[in-house]
Length: 87
Image 1: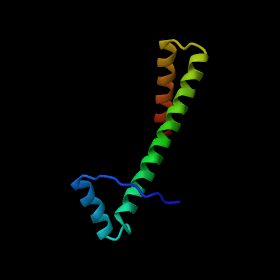
Image 2: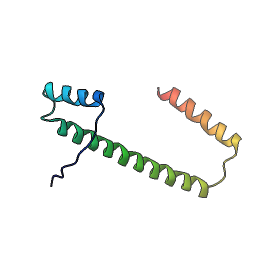
Image 3: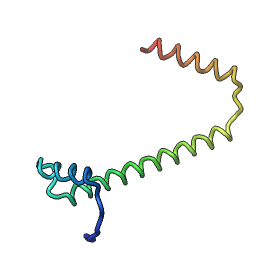
Image 4: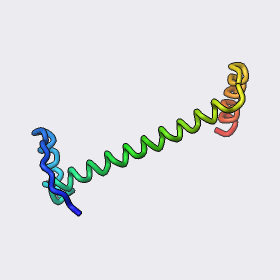
C-alpha cells in the first residue's frame, strides 16, 4: 500500500535527491526519500538491538561475581599477552 504524503525539503536536500535521480540511481525523488527512510529505520532498529544487548550484558555483570580491580588488571594483562601470542 502506498500513502501519499506532503513533505518539505531544503534546497540542498532536494538538489541532492534530484541529482540521484538524474544520475539514474533512483527513478524518482520519492524513491530517494523512501530509501533514506528505510536506512534510518534499519539504523534505529540496529541501535535498539545493540542497546538491548548492552542492557542484558550489564544485567549479567551486575548479578555475577564481584571482580576486584587487581583481578581485572590481571585478566586484561592475560588477554593482551594472549593476543600478542596469537597475533
